[in-house]
Length: 575
Image (cartoon, rainbow, N blue to C red; front, top):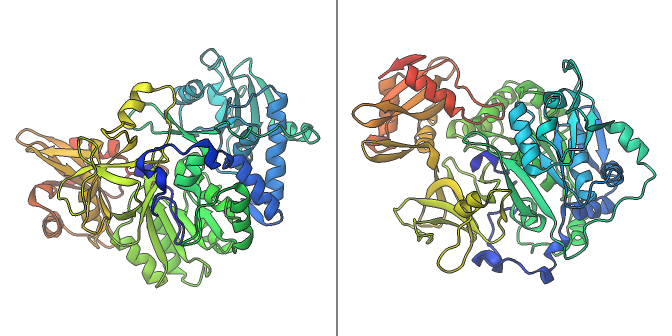
């Protein structure tokens, strides 16, 4: 689940602080006031407290809190006037831009449920998310909506399409946009016409407001994770001063935002994923400024220019793939980004070499990893060089009988969370039963896809995803554990570790390695490095050297590509 982790800034709670009473698995009662902590109410309260502060910077556009709320409410009025009922899903299909957040909050302010849609999906994947969620309306860029022009029969519930202008430089699509027969309106036209309409009432107190986040797709079809909004706020979005109690109401959240010096966060991850989205929402609920990267693809120099221009205090990245080139650009011109004090990463732990690059640029800069996922929220943070996370009391490593392992145990278990966790998967009772089991004491857990160990001090060492385990001669090897060691070699720029078929061992540990500029170690030297840090059966038996390790557009390891390299022997293979 690390691929969707939200980065927790220094001094902020997220999931790394002691859990309240509900950590034992009891669902907080409605009488505790949790239902008032809806995302729509939180934005409204913060906007009332700091209306003239800059909420969002996106390209050449800037929005105050009052302006963001006003446009979100115009969209809410349009949706209500178009017959979108409270609780119905409204999907957003767009790149990072101001309208993404407007549409997200507009759906919430109408009492609807926003649905994130991955703009990299092909037609069949887009149709799956829209059909599975039951989306009745879609806010989409014209070129992206064009992928759905033949999808009308598969989307009987979709009845309204609001078209956004394509980003500057995007190639205009040929033919009509969107499914045939679906009513279409220009996004700006819809907001202009709704300017004088009354804003629909927010969800009534006592009715659970839901949040739906689609995740995955690399190991199967995308699946929707259903949260109560109040639980999501507690588990992933609530940032508070050290030692401060949890806020009891939107008004208290807003008062803290008013009293807090606003921080500026550069969000480099896409809003369609939890990491970028949760970082943005958490910043907005503290009265800070979200600086969005609106570039279609990550560009280190462009990101540095943006961070410098907007004088950001923190930057959110996704692993080494973003953090390394950013640090290298800053090192080349060290006097830029004078206000930058914090780098936060989720998705994959930063390697020691990349941490050292940042500290060489600016000694004392805070470099943090965050661990969590779409199903768990933010579970913990790490500030050192190893994937070792400080976690809250609601997080545990479980054995096969769902019993928490004690500190110092040598056993490997499944990382899990209890307490404020999702209700389950949308339209997937079987998947919900597997991922959200109940233990013998009646506690309900959410099982992450990751395995780890509990150290004597209670911290959790992340070993990696169960799906990436390599079974070699009966020994289980966690690929991500080996990756972290390989990438710690100063001569390694990047690496992915996968299984390759082996007639004798069943599977053999194989590393795909991109040497650092100027040359890297040979295979024997790299194995010696690994042997000093790993058991012998974990040391890569095959090493393939490549010019560049392929990653996804958001910086995650492309294991499918790496497995192909391992099987085919492409690259410079050294056994």
